[in-house]
Image (spheres, protein in one colour):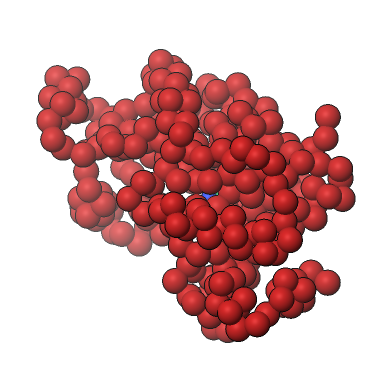
Length: 289
Ligand code: GLU
């Protein structure tokens, strides 16, 4: 069976040099190994994703000279798959709703401890203190049918009790140079969000379900997602899904050393194209030649 690679952008803005690096590395590794290249449109956030951005992704990738298999998987068309996976985790007793806003969570954390020592995830958000885990069932049921928004969270302690030690094979490198067999540490994420009242999935759940559904054998993506792999390995173990190999690559930074964002026009592929750069120039700028 040939290896299966995927490039999985979100159509919530235009692609920049960082996306180009990811897409070109995926394509290069697929070509070198006789593998397949898939494109997956990660559009679960229907408020920020737009069809014109998806059309622009197609155009920009084709301009770079990439070819991928059709049809393209669009996450917004697979909400039933994510609901089913969430239902399985729920049936294991691993899912609970929480009703606090971000600000309320920050206040809870301050009340318990000084903000500085409370554990935070890699994005700097305080870990959820688990307050809603002990909510009386009647109160929970009342809030769920009320207009209150809620997040469905993974009970990390209960989830970890169901699986043994988890590792993944890293063929690239993490931010601190981690490579080879990596010990997953999902606890550092606390009770992660798996879905919300109006969206039946989070990024973590959808990516794991899709990589398995599409038979992805090699995940090639930016180093900013290295630590998220710990959550992905845990969800794969709980759902009985085969783990792909992972290859996290360096991030492209702007002149100030910041990670590129979709709003930095200076590094947008469309802007660079309009300035007369060719796909060869892009590869050279990315150090790929
Ligand atoms: N959709 C994610 C992004 O645009 C990538 C997800 C992944 O490769 O796992 O950053």
